Length: 188
Image 1 (cartoon, rainbow, N blue to C red):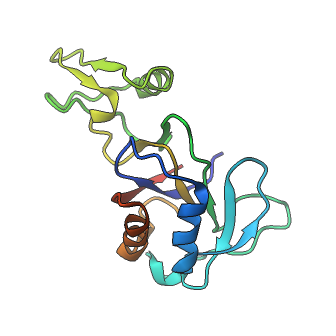
Image 2: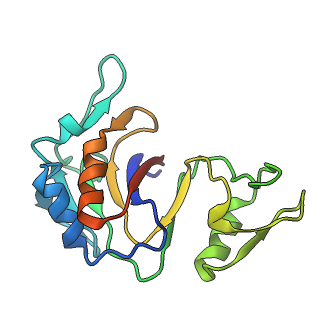
Image 3: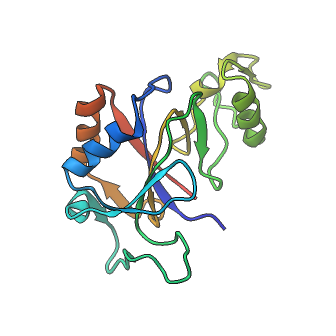
């Protein structure tokens, strides 16, 4: 079972950041991230920072947010992961998300996992809509906020879909550092 998370990403699929450290510095400056956690890959992991709860509003009458690493070593607690900078854009999708729609006729593609696999092999691959015949870049389909591609992602773990809202200040800090607009979506 995958861990629910809020995923922050640059709005331009072609944006290639200079380094993870550039992103880390922007988030550390506003105290969104805290102390470093061990990582088993090239990503960087952090405890939440001192201002984290001022930048995310958790919805519901009494949200329970686990901020300490569990003793069993699980990643299922609220922390932040900055992926490595990928040479080619990587695809990130909500496994429970609906299929994308054709931007012309709104046909919903059910076999979206095959589209993603095709795109990972050839970022210039096109989608041919079976309903209207329109040829469209796969990333130009309407993914309905359930999938994106980018060279880097910032993941806030243990945030369930639509149970938290990210403050604009985090996105603004990233934009000031990178010169690119940033957005977010939810993934499981």
